[in-house]
Amino acid sequence: MTDINIRTQGRVGRITLTRPKALNAVTYDMCTAIEAALDAWRDDDAVALVVIDAEGDKAFSAGGDIADLYATGKAGDFAYGRTFWRDEYRMNAKIHEYAKPIVSFLQGFTMGGGMGVGCHGSHRVVGESSQIAMPEVGIGLVPDVGGSMILANAPGHLGVYAGVTGARMGPADAILVGFADMFIPQDKWPGLIETLVNTGDVACLVGKDAPEGSLTALQTEINALFDATTLPGLLANLRGSDTDFAAKTLKTVLRNSPLSMAVTIEMMTRLRGVTDIRAALDLEYRYTYRAMEHGDFIEGIRAAIIDKDRSPQWKHQADALPTAAIDTMLAPLGDQALTF
Image 1 (cartoon, rainbow, N blue to C red):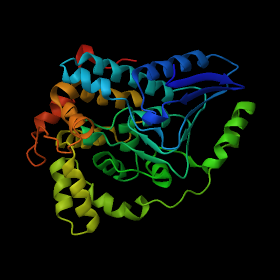
Image 2 (image 1 turned 45 degrees about the vertical axis):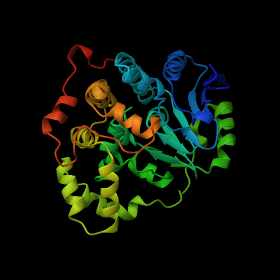
Image 3 (image 1 turned 135 degrees about the vertical axis):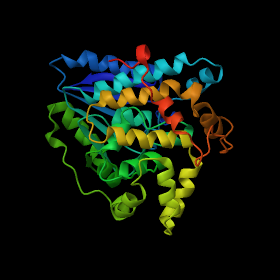
């Protein structure tokens, strides 16, 4: 497959995303190939650890490949999307639960589905160019691929902030929120991978001080503004503040799907303290299973990617979202529930 290069080198199983012109967007076939490789290496004593990296300077992976998702959903075929997300989530869980070390090198953009590949391993390395984000609420989804669990366990209310705004996090902020473990200058990465290949030992991975981020200085204000368990409560907090940060954040929030944001806030409440990725993925799948038919996903993609008019017509107004809509999107799926 030209989109991904899977091989063994020395003591290491290597997975390299090879779609740099597409910002290494993750396709369905790439998801299944990653899972097959992890299965093959699980009981292979010759493979001591797994390294996941990507070609190109701009992105480790800017997200999932949504072209087919949009085309099928627009045509009224919701089965493809449900299958894509189901199998992708199973792969995410396999990375998180893997018994051997998984080392990922996350340059440039790591977003959405790319986060699901790169941010569940045991050793998540960021560098100078790293920008990690979960911007799903801007296209009518919710933070998924296990990202809801990471966000829900971030310090204070930083996770709610990152999930509802889609804010991009540089290396220090990504480590603070929980999407990465260590900062290592990117010029050191090739040598480290060579050492990992030769030794099969992660002892060479030693983090350095990351360039200063922005969230530490904002954390007190974010905790106050995002101390809300509902979208109306959050909007009231933002409107009640006279700071420039609150005003800017309010503008950002009002561009996003109200349904997606309201559900994200509810998910953060339910998942705080939860470290079982399967519980988080189950909750996410309840939403994504319904996202095309009952949510804002098709309209969100149209406005952002297809027509690029940046003027989505969301199903609900931010100030008039019925609570029942949240309950409907997160209701158990019964026989269609995600299984592992």
